Amino acid sequence: MTSRVTTRQRPQLKESFLFVEEGVGPPILLLHGLFGTLSNWEHTQRRFSQHYRVLNLQFPLYNQQFHTVDTLTDYVEGFVSEQRIPELAIFGNSLGGHVALNYALREPGRVRCMVLAGSGGLFERGFDRNIMIHPDREYLRKKISEVFYDPSFATEEQIQEVESVISTTRRKLSLVKIARSARTNNMRDQLPNIRCPVCLVWGREDKITPVAVAQTFKEKLADARLVYIEKCGHAPIIERPEEFNRHAAEFLQGLPY
Amino acid sequence: MKPDEIRARLERIITEGLSKPIALGDVTMDSRLREDLAIDSLETVEMLFEIEEEFGIKIDDTEASEMRTVRHAVESIGRKLESRGLS
Image (cartoon, rainbow over all chains, first blue to last red; front, side):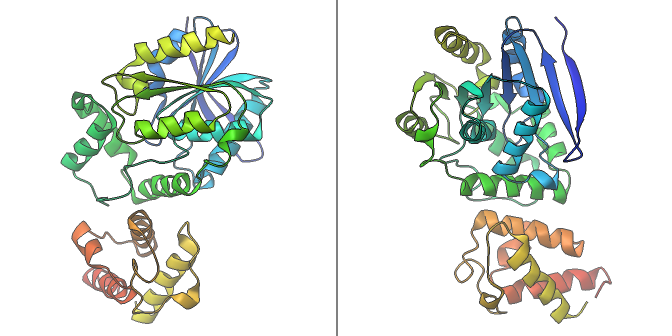
């Protein structure tokens, strides 16, 4: 099965949607994290496109129009509306989880269920101390290593990818503004209003959103289950994609979706 | 660029450019960024990037750590501009 990368203009915002679409069936929207790209979901996209219509959306992280959780949610809202999707499942990692939760509050009738890994929305560590404004490679390697349980995932390729992401002050400023918004936009009090089933898939060794965060999500959300992946950090979709996919598939089959 | 202009542009960044609201009346040359204006580490980074964009300069991490008051920031920006022949 082949996938296609598409950009389409959103008339009101003059903003193109960059996304990959693969497969046929009930729709699943994939939302990546703050430093993320479409490739983060590579394994999940391939796995679920066998039975679902998978839409892997790239956030416009460097567009000043979308520097907050709310405006990124606007972006998702515009995308889902343009795609004319009446009902969908959303998978979100980190910032993508935060935006998914925010979207579910806005469109409760449209979000059938969510699978969240290392989701933002309550507490995130990482941008709170010892921030270098012009980071060297060693600093980047250390910060990227913190995302994973296994530090060997902080590869040269990953470091180069982040270096290109933060290649200009404008880009770095964009990321900082989004991180600020994510920290300000705490969803603790709103979580009970999210009624759809949620599967929380958490790395047991997550240093960015520690397991206590996952437990709070489970307590506050109306209908949530929590599963852990051992020896895994903040990005199960990259570090342990087979296990993430297995938990997500079991969850969807159990609904059923 | 004269210190007064640097100060005015810096005040605009602090009061309008950051994600959190800070009242202009709260900003003086002796305001301490962290203690008086409650600008935390992430907001400091945001402010520094805004300064780099606004003045077209690059602030290294050592200089950034020495900007503890509005006056420090104005003087540091002034030195940067001067060294580039932009003062």
